[in-house]
Image (tube, rainbow, N blue to C red; front, side):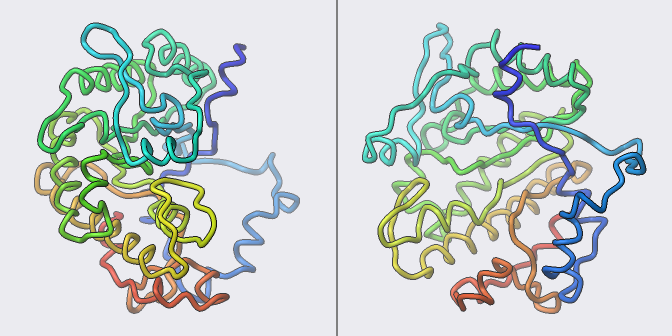
Length: 309
């Protein structure tokens, strides 16, 4: 098997929508003891571990992590999309690698063949906002056709596509407006989501945001260092909490807008947080809030669970 197989981020793929729809989480059940039990592989008998026929095992990609800012134009020339990561990469004097070269059709075809050959039947793909809408209201239809070709190729191999609309990256024009620091900008994401949703009806499983808490915490909070773009340092969590809330509001707004277009498709998001209060549907970073008292996050209330079914 080719070594390129190991460049693909393989994971046990438990769909977020199925999980959230099937598991009813309460304050008393979602605690450290439960998490410890779930992660205790010594107590799990693998020969007695069974999965239903409809269970999906899959892999996933982030467009920026596998192709960087690059894409091919209509003449087959490599171009660079400008995003919220562009100035951050330049400021930190980072070099962008091109080992994966996922923008080349021969490369992604080889990778996708390996996914199918490995027995996986699901794949999370991203529709990168910065490449599809490089300027507000102007869409790169050529890139969109390339994305549709990749989707079709995966489906022809028996792999169900889960399409993600935002994985830590957005266009530079959106960043210049304040991105998700400003609630008025939420509609820009909704319009982008609607465009892609209408253009790709062949995908039935959609994800608005991947891990919506990561960018607020690693891109907007920290006195000395930021791990991720846009690299805005704030000593308190107030700005980070605002960005987090607006991202969740954007998810809810996009969910309802997309369901109006086609209610038969599944829409959710991939999260790394849990509810701290079932009654108030209060979304908070489980554990850290209680440990450090970051009340900026604890004020977030949103109609979340009803938009993840």
